[in-house]
Length: 253
Image (cartoon, rainbow, N blue to C red; front, side):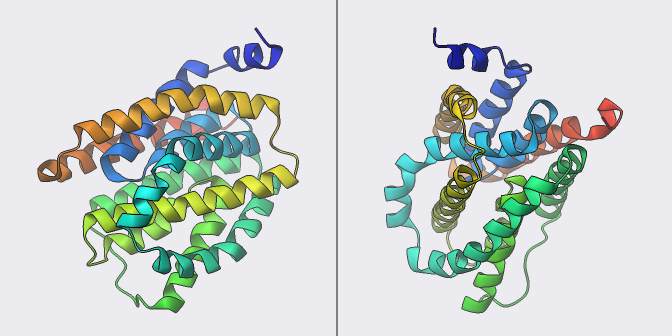
């Protein structure tokens, strides 16, 4: 067995990461989002911040890139272009913040962001402001900033699209396209900073297996007439992961 694979399989907390990847995949299959919201609070317990971000980006892209052609046909790529303009400014600033953020602050940020997102979604909060091109640039920039710093690019754009009159299928496709773009840019910047190395690549490949299995299971189980049930299930997964990831339980270490 290659040494790098052996090291990945010996990663402390690997079982917890596998479970988080599986549940994150199921959340993605149920709702079209949620991978990072489920995975990152748990990953922050056992991985360094930059390592956790690198692993989730690689794992998520491995599972979602094959679905991009279908998403491009079902969604509205032109609309994603305005979000991407903002993302180009937001992601580099977020990656810089990631490199200076202490581990405990990172874990607080990830868990509280996940809890706040679930609370907003469950309470039915929706963006009530403008929906023009300028606002999409702002939302894209905010998503890129948060995504670069915590790998949770989803919340701003999710809350924005949840208020959209667009059909659910188009919203899911747009989210997939945009979050994949954020992931590709984050991957490039992390590589330039030397964060991506053999252990991260192999660990991401290992975790991609349960993630893809979970996503396929979630997609297979999804029924449009029970969308509310699946959303509640995904919210419970996210909230549970966020609570587990809070530094409170580890004495703030």
